[in-house]
Amino acid sequence: MTASFDWTRGYASQRLPIFGRNVVATSHPLAAQAGLLMLRHGGNAVDAAIATAAAMSILEPVSNGLGSDAFCLLWDGTTLHGLNASGPAPRAWTPDYFRRKHGAGERAPPKRGWDSVTVPGAVAAWVTMSERFGRLRFADLLAPAIEIAERGYAVPVVVQQKWAAAASLLADQPGFAQAFMPRGRAPKVGELFRFPDAARTLRLIAQSKGAAYYGGEIAQAAANHARAHGGAITVDDFAAYRPEWVTPIGMACADRHGASHTLHEIPPNGQGIAALIALGILQNFDLAALPLDGIASQHLQIEAMKLAFADTYRFVAEPASMEVTSAQLLDPAYLAARARLIDMKRAQDFGHGNPAKGGTIYLSTADERGMMVSFIQSNYMGFGSGVVVPGYGLSMQNRGHSFSLDAANPNLVAPGKRPFHTIIPAFLTRGTGEAREAVMSFGVMGANMQPQGHLQTLLRMLAHGQNPQAACDAPRWRFNAGLEINVEAAMDPVTAAGLQALGHRVVVIDDSYQDFGAGQFIWRLGDPAVEGYVAASDPRRDGQAVAY
Image (cartoon, rainbow, N blue to C red; front, side, top):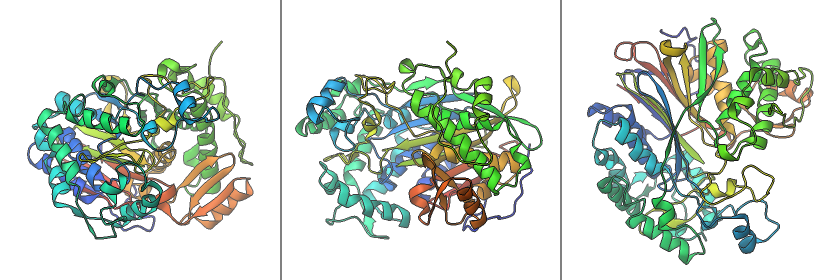
C-alpha cells in the first residue's frame, strides 16, 4: 500500500515530510506534543485528538477557544464515522428578534457580541468522542491544556500577527480586553501569555466530563453574562445540546494509476459538499494530462470551484431546511451538465444550477492500531464574537452571523436551528464496501478556502503523485466572488498572467496567512504498526507534525 509519491521538495519550504507509526499534526507544536503524549501513554488517535484540541483552545485563541464548534471524521480501523458538533441558535432567536433589536434592514445577525453566539459544541465533541472511542480517562486528556494555560506560553509569530490585528477591533467587546489584552494590548512575539481563567474552566470540564459546561456552573456563568449584555442564550439552551453522529458523504475519484478512491466530507449544514461538487465536476476532464502548475489545470479547478460554491451558497443549510438533498447536488448527470458550462478559453461568473428533479484550527491524528482522526474546531472570525465570559476564559464563537434574515433563504434563522458552517474536516479512503481502507486524514483551515484547499491539495497527490508536504507547500489560489481570485506570490508569474488573460481578476497576495488557509495531512503508507504514516504540516502556520 506504500504510496508511489514523488519525494522531491518541489517548492520553497522549511518543512519536510514526517514519518512514524503514531502521528499528530496541527498548527502549534505544543498542542501536537500534547497529543503525542497521550499516544505514548497508551491512548489512541481519539485521545490524542482531544488532548490536541483542548491545548489548541489555549495556544491559538485567535482561531478557536472553549466556546468553539467542531466537526470530526473518525476512522475506527474499519468504519468511517462523522460527528457534527455545531451548535444551534438559542430558542429566543427568530427573524423578528433581530429586526426588533438591530433594525429591519439587516440581512444577517450581527458579526460580534452575544447576538452572534450560538450554543458551542466543541466541548461536547470532546466528551462524546472520548466516551465512544477513547482509551484514557477523560480528565487526563485535558491535563496538558490545563498546564499550558496555568504556566503560560510564549506567543508565536503567526498567532501574534492575528492577535494584534484583532485586538483594536474587539477591545470593547464584553470581557475581551480582560482576557486577551493583559497589558492593555496584544502580546508581542515571544511574550508570555497565561490564561488561568481557562485553566479553571478546563478543570471543571475535566472533573465533570463536560456536565459543568452544559447545564452546570459554566453554562450559568455564560447565561448570566449574556443576560447582562443583552444576549438571549440561556442555561436551558446549553443543557439541551447534543452533538450528532452523521453518515459522511463522499465523491469517488481515481488516482493517476486508476485506483479507486473516495473523498469524504461531513454532510450539510457544512460546506464540505462544495469540495465534492467540484471534484465531481472535474471527473469529466482529464486533469492528470494537464501540466500540474499550468494555466489550463488551474483555470479548470477554479471554474469547477466557482460552480460548486454557486450551488453551495444557494442550497446548503440545515438539512431539514434544504430544498434539495445532498444526493441531488452530487448526482453524476447533474455534475456532468454543470461541467459542460466550463469554457477553457475564458473565466465566467456562474449562477447556481437546478439540481432538483421536478478563524479555525485543524488537527489530524493517527495511531499504530489504524485509528485516524480528522478534527476541526473554530471560533469563526478569528476570536469569534469577541465576547469572553469573565472568570472562565470562555471566548465565544460567532456562528450566528452565518444565519440569514431573508425569509426566502434556506439558512433563515430559527430557534434551535444550526447555521451554515464553513469548517470541514476531510478524509480519503481507497476501495469500496468491505474492502475500503483508510488512506488520509486531512484538512485545510480558512473560511471558504477550506473546500478549495481540499480540492487543490488532493488533486496534487492523486492526479500528479506529489507527496503530502509538497502538495501542502505548493502555491494556492483562492476564489472570492464573481471573477476575482487571489493567488499566492509564489505562484509561477506565467500561470498568474495566463489566468488574467482568460478573464480572471487576479490579485497577487504576499500574506499567505490571511488568504490561503493552512493544512495538516496524515497519509497511511501501509500497515500502521509496520510502515506507519507520512505526515505534513503547513508552513503557513506556526505548527508541525510530530511522530514516534
